[in-house]
Length: 231
Image (cartoon, rainbow, N blue to C red; front, side, top):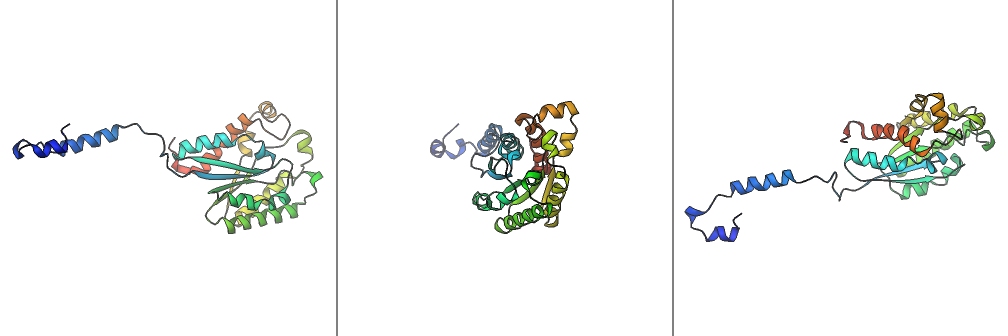
């Protein structure tokens, strides 16, 4: 390729046009390998806010990977979650959620409220989730807030949660009353055969992480990305 300095030293009649050089440069740029997404793209920040179904869920890394590939940008998920806790505990953790300045908050906070030995009434649980959602909406006005229903319970853990469906319905109602989003993972779990479901959730409450990822991640990617997925 002739240099600009040399081009200037040539007689006018011998100077080649630079149109073809510009075309060549464009072709080179178009043929350069693509890196997937721009390294300088700001990450999509997500906070997973919940109980042991989040704290030991194991689905977050899979969601990071699949959503990043789908959206062509980095995704970072932080968890504010603790095993055995209720919505009363969650009310004391809102500062931690807000401090992350997330773009999306994923919430599951009904499971231990519904356990009889926790003594959290349905009315109390509904009030708590309403207060949590109101505070998050006020302090994170640009964030998407997504309330979730997770996997079914069985065995002893199911017996101590005889009204779990009512708690889920109450949390869903409070979300929808505020125009917030709700994702129900239970139908996808229910597509498993009884034997596969029992193998996937051996203790009756906590799915194996790899199975949880297979069930939860595609649903969340579809819900969050919608028609924008470019996998």
